[in-house]
Image 1 (cartoon, helix red, strand yellow):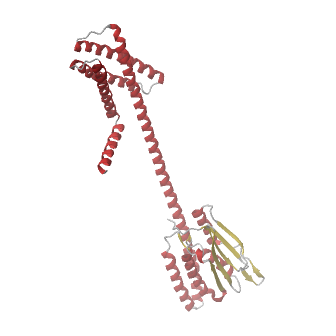
Image 2 (tube, one colour; image 1 turned 120 degrees about the vertical axis):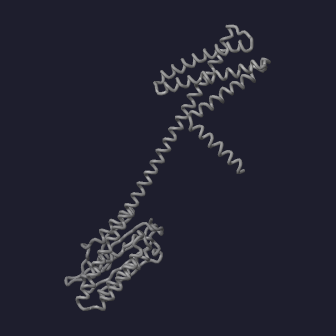
Image 3 (cartoon, rainbow, N blue to C red; image 1 turned 135 degrees about the vertical axis):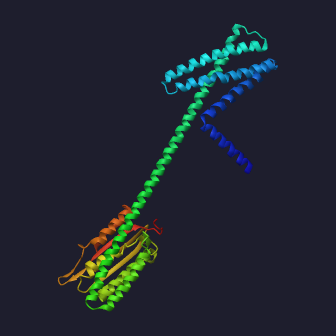
Length: 382
């Protein structure tokens, strides 16, 4: 079986090489065609007339050889007018074919008489001439058929090359767009760290200024834990929700050290949503907004609620707070957006195009509710 396959492969490769080499193909078909004429003439005319002697067979061989010689200039003439107008090409083909047929006819008749000793009457020349016309017209038609076939193959290969190049360019463009998207996502993610770091260091500085060194040390320790958690995941664009919640919890531990009993956190996350992948640092800036614009400005602090659930093929996440309690009463903090929310909007647009929801509504807790819906996925973004 293996030998058969190898033989077929060698035949295919040889045929492919022959098709690709026009000069070799011409001579292969030329010799095969006139060789076939020699065989057919020997089996039909010579044997049919019971004349299998050497002069007759030799004449058939000479006739085929002259065919090879006479059709060589025909090829040159056809190739010279190949790019001309169709009418001119047709006239040249007919004229050249007719002239070569006449010359070939007279020469092979003369050689036949000389080689066999037979005499051909002039009224028999017509039969010889008609057979010559048929043979040379067949050769001309075959030449053009092969030529058009080769052109068709060249056009097919050209189209394949163009398509392959287009696909290559498409892949390169897609890769460039993906790289640009990843770069932008990473830039937006990294933009959050300095923002949070500045706020935290400012809080630690405030604690040191009040001689509350114990809380300052606790906050520094918690900051160290938070940075360790986030930096370990900094190369990932999407991470499991549970991992993001752990990072948020580290952030909230830092804030609880600062606000104490004024900050209450309600985690209301469905277990089935924990494996869902979300953009890294998606929740932390939203929680930071609630602390900055609601908890820190409220006389009695407040509540931050983080919720998540899987709804069909979507992951719904929300961060809401209890708003601001001032001397004039409780009010919503809807005017607070900040860099975190703008950053979140931009990151979701880059990653999901239009296939997401980000909206602000009033929370039943009294403040603002940020709702995010994104496609549910457990696959890692690469």
